[in-house]
Length: 154
Image 1 (tube, rainbow, N blue to C red):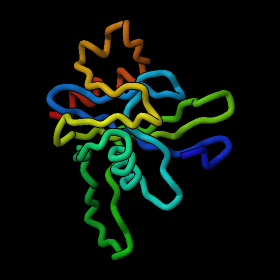
Image 2 (image 1 turned 30 degrees about the vertical axis):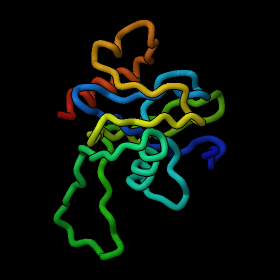
Image 3 (image 1 turned 180 degrees about the vertical axis):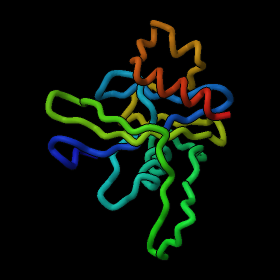
Image 4 (image 1 turned 90 degrees about the vertical axis):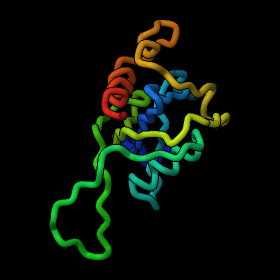
């Protein structure tokens, strides 16, 4: 999806783990390893965006690890509690545009992924040690979130 706002867009990121490995894609536009994710479209909430992006970009069925928080407060039938992201961050995309990212940890139900060829050059499951290999040149923030997912998701 193209940017919906000139300066800042809201996006979701799925740090997907399966069998002790975390899934990353090599993004065509950014030319770097990133998690599955993308823009929250105007007609969807963050949870819907997360599941849609995962299906579109890798075809996996996932379970979000962070549970919806039950406040005990009686909600109207029109109110939906959303899963809380593990982290939220803001980062630059270019000199004039930034993304506010809702970072979710998730568990995959299988490791059978499909590459979204229009968006990514490669898709790969990484072990924790592979995240540190210089040949992949993975950015420090990506390593941080990926390692956090690996430690959290069992």
